[in-house]
Structure formats: structure tokens, C-alpha cells
Image 1 (cartoon, each protein chain N blue to C red):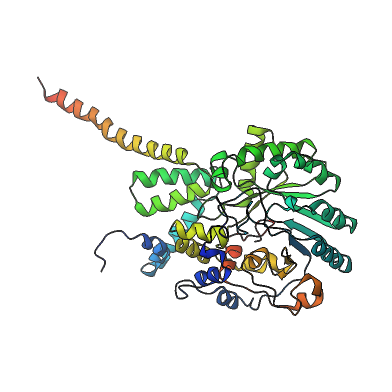
Image 2 (image 1 turned 45 degrees about the vertical axis):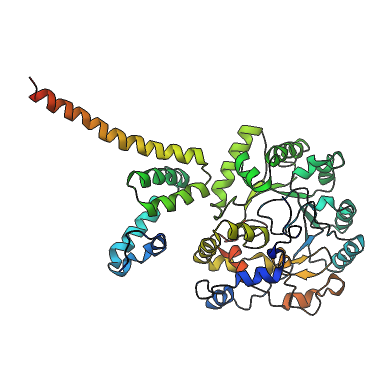
Length: 346
Length: 111
């Protein structure tokens, strides 16, 4: 399987994605209008605390739902120079307490470890969104669990389900087996084990055109099944809704599920989830250093509505005053119990 | 007036049955919501029961709704099909067990 970009798929064009999302306005009311009805438009930040950095689109996996359109054929990688600019901004802004590293597989960036060490030297909490299989992909990654432990990194990993069939259908053949081995390696060094303080959180996202079930019940099922079948332990489970963009949008359109899925998201619009959306306390940075309201806006190339749009022109106060850009994909974060990179929000 | 009896889009209008009788509809939906909550049985278990019953009563709306719901809640294809077989076995068995009544009657009138 290749990325949409490598396949020259029309949906690799972000303008085309936005055009698709804005079709049928009489059937699908605009997200902006929904926010107006609850007095939340324009959507304003509550104060930026999370610095989410996408350090490259290269990945060892090609997941069917990937909103980044990541894969081995994507060569976009953040340079050390841009990383240094991020470190300078972090040093100058102590309120940015959490740094969330994502990709692609962030570990495939050749300067990943240097960057993590630089952030830790600034005494920030670091989250790495590890796809698990990268740990097993090559001998040079086998020591990642030790590296994470040494720097007290919070590891957040996708495992779409606790069974092989659903996981492999979404993430590719053999991914479940490698993910289980990687989780066991993380457990071995203490991750997910009570009393170690080493956080290992899993991410559930639906392998199909449906919404996640309630997070707490699902977490209990994951805990039971993974312990019983593989002796694996973890801390928390984040249930995340798939947003209708990029490769997941392609899946919805090709499978004929797009309209029903949008209807489902809109019907499930929850004002409480809208209040808690992650873009209100997060800034997302792309591999070139441009700034966005969230990782999804980044993938739609919707840069922040602020004078400074690049890490080299970062002004926290200005960003805290900006209006967050919303579009139809935002319904994915406000449906039901809500969705964010940290799971449900309502 | 539609020229067919079932329309998939009608499922989304189910909540509007209160338009003709609000009080009873409100009571029904409150009770319905309560029935499917986690309780002595989990919401997940109830979803699979609903799927089986949907097949027993052959309600296309219910089959759509609970096929999605049971799959969303984590049941796999084989589990869901086994639930349908359970419903089918009970439906088939319900007919066949009446064969005993037939046998009783025949035996009572035969020489």
C-alpha cells in the first residue's frame, strides 16, 4: 500500500479535501454554525500548554485510516535546524509544559534522540506517539524502550483493538503480532507497570466507519484481554474518533460510508465536547516549522490565524488571542464523548 | 405516500414518532435508554441480545442499528453470526416443538 501522495490521488490535495468536506451544506450544517448556536464561535484558546510537533511524515507502516498520509514513501522530515528553533521557543516559554512528538514514526527522524534529550534538558514532559512496530522494525530501534525509560518519556501507542483481525485490517498484516512483542518489551523495562511511574497509554480508534464505544468500558476490556492473552499491562486507554480527512476520508468515500459517517458525527454533536476540544490548549508544528491549531488542521494545511505562522516567528500571547480555524472535519472532535489526542473530552 | 414499506433513512426519524403521541413516545425512549445501560448485564452484552432479537423479529431497522452497535462495541463477525444462529435456532425450534402437538393430535385420532 502506498500513500495518497505517491498514488497521485486527488485527495492528496488539501484544497480538494476541503471542497469535499464542504459539499451538501443543506444536509450537513456548518461546524461554524453549530458553534454559534452554543455561543462558542469564534473558538478561542484557553491558553497554549501543549506543543505538539510532527517531526516527519516518514513511517514504517501504511495505516488505512492515517490522517497524515504517512508511510515509507514520505520523505518529509524535520531538520535539526527547525528542531533547534523549537527548543529555543520552549526555552523562552516555560508555560509550554508538555511536548507531544508525533509523525509518521517520530523515531525515524535521524535527530529524534538528540531532540528528545534537548527537550528533557529544558525539564518538559515529553510524550512520544510510538506506533510500537518501529521498536521491532530494525535492530537500531530495539533499545527504544530503554531510551524512553532513561528520559522518563510518556509513551502513547495505537493499538486499534486487542485482537489481531481488527488491528491488522487497519494497520497492515503482521502489525498486531509486532505490536504485542513491542508492548512486552516496554513492560519488561517497567512501562505500564504499577509503581514505576513509566506511563504507557494505548490508543483505540475504530477500524471502520463508526464511532468509538465508551472509553472506560473499553479500557476494562483491553486490560482484561491483553493481560489474559499476552500478560501485557498498560496505564490508560484513549478512545479516539477518526476524523474525515486524508486516507480515512478516502476510505469513507470509496466504501460509500462518507455521508452516513458525517451524519453520525453531526447527530452526535456534543456541546460539552466542543468546550473541551484540544485545539484550545495546543499548538501543532509541522516538519517545516509552520504553526497550526491542531494536527488535523496541519494535514489540511490550515495555518494559524496569527501574524506569526512559523516557529521562527512564535509569539505566545498573540497565539493565545487568535481565533481557531474550524471546518467540517471538526465534527470528529465533538461527537459523543468527544475526541482528542488524549482520548475523550466530555 | 411512499410506494415501498421500508426505507433505511426512516431509522433516523424514529425519534420523531412522538410527533403524533409525545407522552407515550417520551416514556418509551426513556425506558429504552434505561434498558440498554450497563447494569446487571453490560451494554455490550445487551447489544448482542438485541442483534439476535432483531433477527428473530426480522426488523430491518433493528438489524442495521444493532449490527453497527454490536460491531462498534467490539464483537467480531463470527460472534455476531453465532448470535443470529441462536435466534434462528429458537425460531426453528419454536416451530419444530409444535410438531409434538401435531403428533399428539394425530395419535389421538388415529386408530
